[in-house]
Length: 289
Image (cartoon, rainbow, N blue to C red; front, side, top):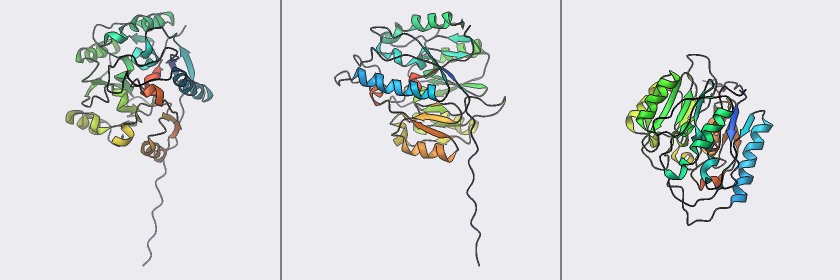
C-alpha cells in the first residue's frame, strides 16, 4: 500500500517595514572597566576593527532602505556605541535612561538632549532603567526585563508614561543581563491585537517568566543555548530581514524555516564590551521635525 508524502508546510511570506534607527560610531570604543561578564579589561581591544564591523552594520541598514540617525560619540564614554540602552521611544515620546553603573551615567544627558533636539517629548526617568536594552515593544505590549539592570519601578513608570501593558520578565543568567540579549521581537509592525513572532532563550529566564512567554507567545522560536551564548538573540528585524551574528547557525536555520531572511553581521569586537547588533541599534518611533 503506497503512502502519499505530505507536502512541506510553506513558511509565510514576510513583509519588510522600513525602520528608523539611532546609532553611534564606536570611535572611542575600548574595554577599560568591567560591568558585565563579557568585559575583560586585561584583554586588548581593536578600536579600528570595531569601527569597521559597526560600519558594515550601518551600511547594510542603509542598503536595505532603513534610515539611520547618528549621535556623536563622546570621549570617555566607550559604551555609547550601544545606543539601544540610550532610551525607549514610542509615538514621539522619549523615556531616557538612568544607568545602574556610574561608568555609563555620563551618557544620559547626551541621549536626552539628542531626543529633545529631534522633536521628542522627554518624559522621566525617575527610576533606574537601561532603555531598549530591557524594554522591547511587542505588538500592543512592552516586554520589560528585570533582575540585573532596570528596576521594577521603571516598569511601572513605563506603563504610566506610555499607557500600555508592561509584561515583566526576570532574567537569571548574568551573561544575559539585558532583555535584548535573550529575546528578540521579529515583527516590529503587526495589526492591532495581533501577536508578533518573538525568539527567546528559555534558560535566560526564571520559571514564571518562561510560563508567561509560553502562554503569551505560543508560536515563539526557542533558541538553543549554543546560539544564545554567541549573542544570536541580540538581533534587529524589519519584519523580513533579521540581522544576526554569523555564529548563531541554528537560529539562522530556524529563521529561514519561518520565512525570514537572515542577514549575517559580525560584531565580534563589540561583543568584547558585552554588546551586539541590537545593542548598537535604538529604534526611533515618531517625532523628528
